[in-house]
Image 1 (cartoon, rainbow, N blue to C red):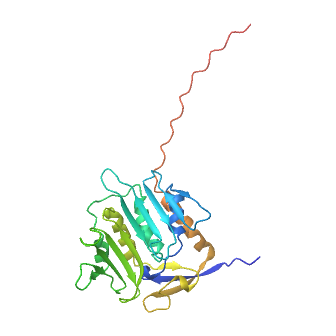
Image 2: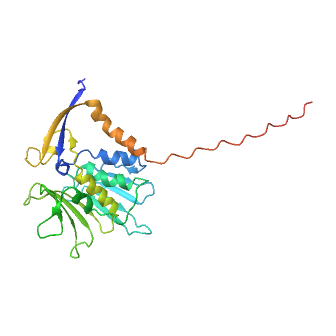
Image 3: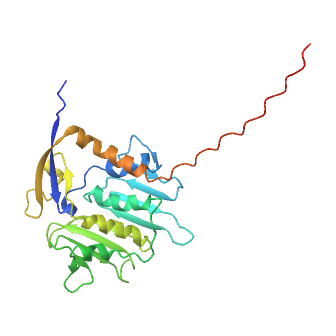
Length: 260
């Protein structure tokens, strides 16, 4: 049997929006194990479908070379119409998790006045020339809110390897997506922490370019393997503790029956 390595080479990539998609399990496993989302499995189809415990949200991971790989649909609520969010294949899973973690957080404050632009401005993003969009300091990502010509009120987040290049990935949020969720996404997008990546460089589209900073570190294999388990445990801990059961009332001792 091949020897299991004790040390793993890990690349840390910055900026994070150019780090590549990463492992989808970073999103799907915590949703199932820590947040109680159920899954449907079709062994003949290369896709994952997860539904929330209240059956109001449905997440599909469907490899589609011509479309968005991740799609989240949420049903209508008393105070909000149905909404959606979708993400391209190369959207880093850690940034997608910014939204799904906020969606499933039982203690989240659903601020209607949350501003998705705020984390961007705090991180030094600037208005794009001649547009209302905000563009990242390195010019490889921008965020726009659509006007009345396409999908009024929708948000698009796009990452490119250059101004004349095709989008590397795009995230789309429908008009009625809760603002605090989009803000959680833009906060994860602008987090300066580099993202860890293992495997072949082909999974990192910007690998070898001057657009990213790559720092390689040797880490214990057990530490790399336990990262997802640690994440599941941290998210599961957000659930309120179940109320302690009151002890059952003690019955008075039965009176002795008659004896012959």
